[in-house]
Image 1: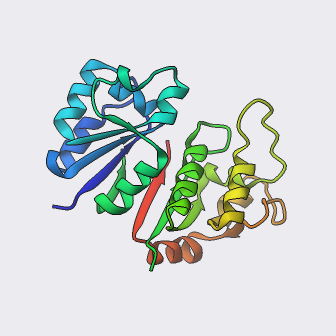
Image 2: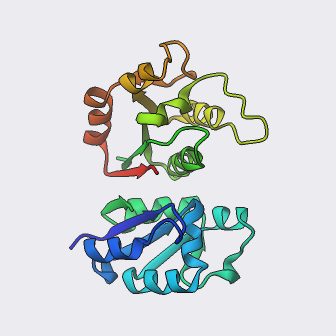
Length: 100
Length: 119
């Protein structure tokens, strides 16, 4: 099974990405990248728990998180990264990218 | 040989931050030594319109123009462009008004990864 990076752009109020991630991949092959309002997925306990069950790695854009008034200490799941870290995950550590 | 990334974006310049994110990813990839293509489709073609003046918001057209100067090859769908009343010559410097069948497929054929940024 290929390693897949799932890009999430929407908040939990708009979308539950965990269902799609679990349908298309297995946890140990799935990484989630949270950008724009997607960062709220890591700030809301229920959404963060779902994402944690679906993906073994959750990478949150630091820039997009801080633009919304939050910091790494607010995260319920995952870690923050720069855009360069996101590119590295997409290009070197996963084989496919899916925007959910 | 450097790996190649293609970014397909379909969101307009004033709809959300999608286009800004697409350009930031392109610049980050370029800085890491990757070759980068970008293709605008649907409402995304509005990003290459020259002369955008969004006042207090980031000017994604200018940001893309800078990225193109730094080496990001960029094309948009001609049909989508014409459908919005834009004409050739109105695009930012370096952007190509091209097509899905030629430019996008060529971009994909050269790419190791494809990202879609869209609503």
